[in-house]
Image 1 (tube, one colour):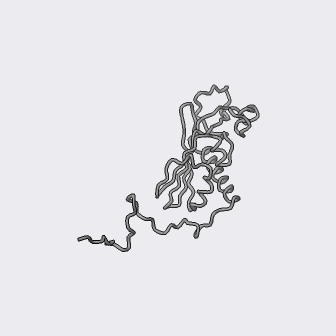
Image 2 (tube, rainbow, N blue to C red):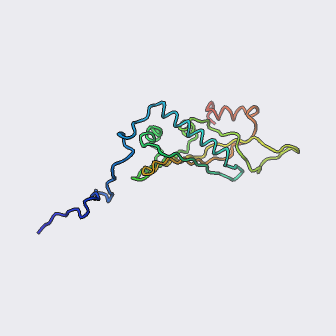
Image 3 (cartoon, rainbow, N blue to C red):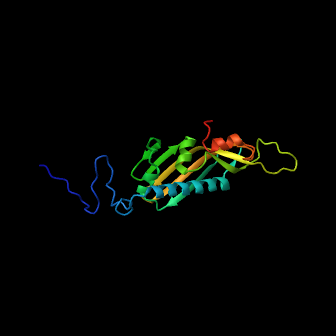
Length: 190
């Protein structure tokens, strides 16, 4: 005799193919959070860029062999907003599960376009290794460049985390480092 398998626990959804459980009503769908306007997307990108640059300048100490990580988090970010912000970076998506989506960006041009910032961060803190200081001088104006940025979006918590790795890119004030300023603004290739 064949019997049909009934759901023993009617309050729980049935298993779908692939062994995944069906997600409950998604609080981040378009009915709750409408898609953002292009102006809102630009504002979110600029805010993320400002906050990340401020965190790099505040906490990251660069040196000859140091690659510091700096991270920021944003709460209550709708999935539609994240989708709009990360549009054009689908090739950089490394993971997309039911709980989290992850992007890894390694090109500094893509990073600067995403965060609406310059390619180099300046001034940044430095530990003093590799510099020869004149007597009486105590500070050196240092630059840093992006090695990579990881963007993680937790769908359940609606939490966006941006982690940046930076490395020292040289020293010199902007008045004397004309080539660094041109590179930072994207006016030159290398």
